[in-house]
Amino acid sequence: MISDSAKSIRLEPLLYLILQLSVFFDYINGTPHSGLNEYMDTDRPYFDDINPRNVSTAADEPAILKCRVKNKGNRTE
Figure 1: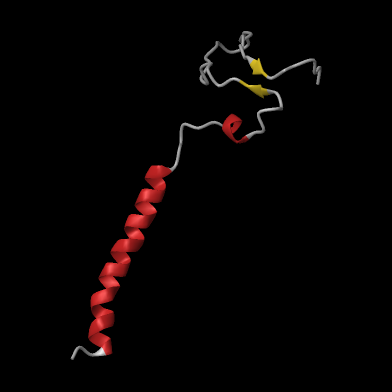
Figure 2: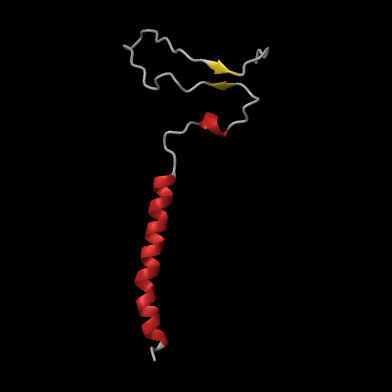
């Protein structure tokens, strides 16, 4: 018969492996490319996420930032 201490010694590496795999797959399943717009209510206006995020310009020169608003309706705010 296997003693209780021998059982716990064999279970510790297995539990550690399960924990590590759980953390790893939780990280993989995350969606780093999702924007905040996906979590907002679709009835409210939101910015369309198709434009580039990185814009370069020279110092003291104006930069044109283009954006598109979805579900704007007749709101002015």
